[in-house]
Image 1: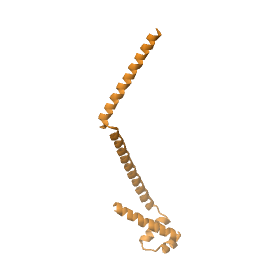
Image 2: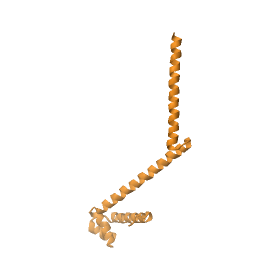
Image 3: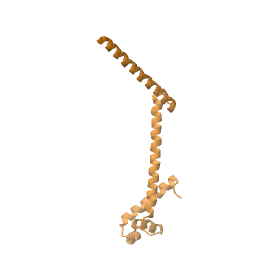
Image 4: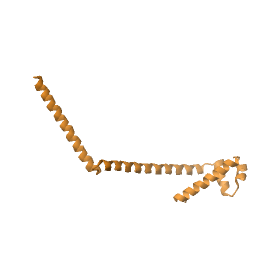
Length: 128
C-alpha cells in the first residue's frame, strides 16, 4: 500500500513539474514575441541600450534643472549678481571689489567662471 501511495505521489509531482515546464516555455515564447529577442546576446544588448537611453534622459533632465537653477540664480539680487553686472559695465576686478566688498581674488574667480560658462554655452549652442 505504501508503494502504491509513493507511486501516486511521484506521478503527481511529475505532473506538476511538467505543468511548470510548460508554463515556463509558454512565457519564454510570449516574451520572445513581445520583445523580439531570440538570443541572450540580443537581450543583453537591448538592456544596455535601454540603460544608455535612460542615462541620456537623466543627463538631459539634470541639465534642464541646472539651467533653470542658473536662471533663478541670475535673478537673485545681491553682491554676486552685482559682480556680473558691474563687469558687464566694464569695471575692473579691483573696482568691483571696492564697490561690493568682496575680495578681489573672489571677483576674479567669479569672472573666470562666467567666462568659462559663456564659452561652454556657446560650444553647446545654448547662447541666445
